[in-house]
Length: 124
Image (cartoon, rainbow, N blue to C red; front, top):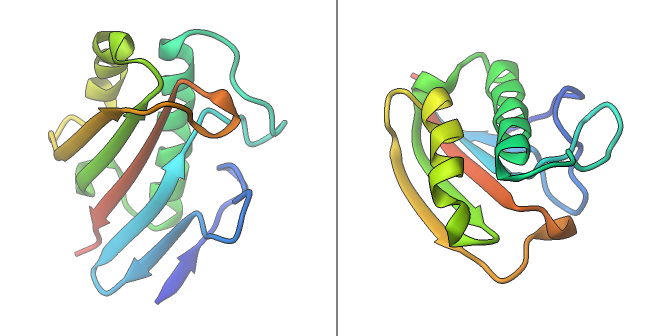
C-alpha cells in the first residue's frame, strides 16, 4: 500500500491519510470544504462548499496521476437533503463519467460543513 498526500488538499485532521493506493485502486478519505492554503472552511452555501470539496478531490486525484474520469465510486454525505439538487449540479460538472454513487443525509459533518465526498478510483 502507498499513501497519497499533497499540500494542495487539506491535511488529514486525524489518524488517517488523504488517500491510499492498494493494488490498482485509490481510496480517498472524505473531503470537506477546507481551503488548503488557510485551513478555513469555504464560507457560503452548498454550491460554494461543494466546489471546494471537488477541488480538494481533484488535487488528490492529480497527486495520484489520475483525474475524475477514473473514479468508479463516490460516497456523498449531505447535512441537508434539501441541498441535493444544488449539490448534484456541482457534482455533475466534475464526475462526467457518472461513477456509482451513494448519497445520504447525515445529522452532523466534521466542522459543521454542508457536504463531504469520498471516492474510489481505478488506477489502471
